Amino acid sequence: MKPMTEEFKRKFLKDTDHTGRQVVISLRTGKRYGVEAIDGKDKIKWGDLNPATGKVEGQYGVKYKGSIKRSESLITEDNGFKNIVEIEAGMSPAAQIELMDADYPTVNL
Image (cartoon, rainbow, N blue to C red; front, side, top):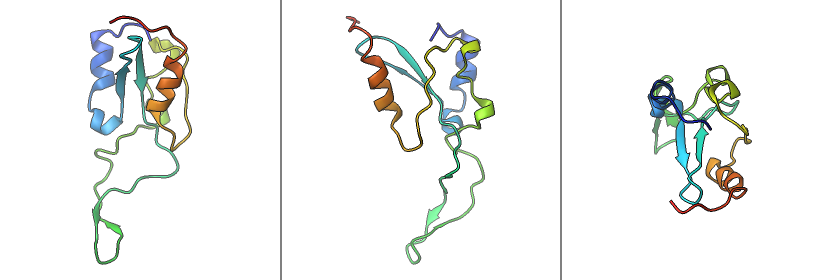
């Protein structure tokens, strides 16, 4: 990942509660990893849990959905990202980052 310009950083990290975008910096190597949660087929339903029925009720729209549409992704080679990996739904981004980070030597930070 190339150094982020201030403009790109503002765009990438704006409204992270809505987009699910984050930058993870490895404490072992100092490498930075961009993470985006992409909408999948299985939507998480947000609302209030009704204790009587055990069902989620209420409609909160798309605010704070924590993910983006694939067409809104900023993680592209054109934006300076390398070794772009898409993991399957249910897999841990943190675990994937650990696997990728293991390919690099430890750096004293």
